[in-house]
Amino acid sequence: MNSKITVNENITLISLHNVSASMSAIADIFEKIGEMDIDVDVISMSPVQSDLTSLSFTVNDEDTIKLLQFIKTLPGLSTKPTVSSGNYIISVLENAMENQPGFASKIFRALAQVNTDIRIISTSEIQISMLVTEADFNCAYAAITECVKNM
Image (cartoon, rainbow, N blue to C red; front, top):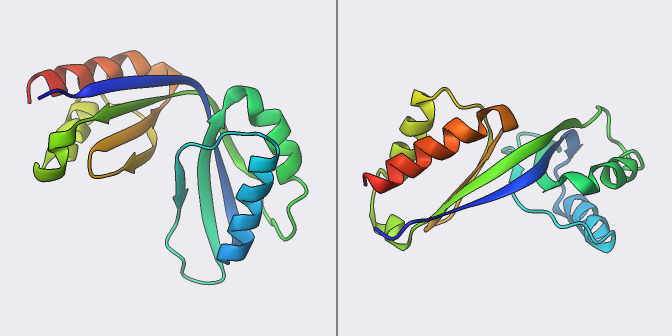
């Protein structure tokens, strides 16, 4: 395998709860964030069960204060955002992953064995990205590196 492991540091996870599940409202949020020249990386939306949802996404730590000032202005936001800064995104890119069932489970098992606190996971056919806390970064990175080496 030719897996590539990359790391992005100083990442903040923002979670907005009870936001409108309307795609128009969600598009408005991300358009305004884009206009603020803030780069959003991982985005996750909870399954919609009503007209409200939870929306989580990551940004660079340096953009957190500016972003939180914007979030205060969002109409209808009934709860304060959950904010977790100082995190790392560890990504594993492997083209063979697309046709290899169980690849993600091996990564997850390696992380479970070192009791890693995973905040959010994003996947595609050839990549897995995990947001880990600063406290767990070294163990998580070592576990992923060893796991990939042994696949």
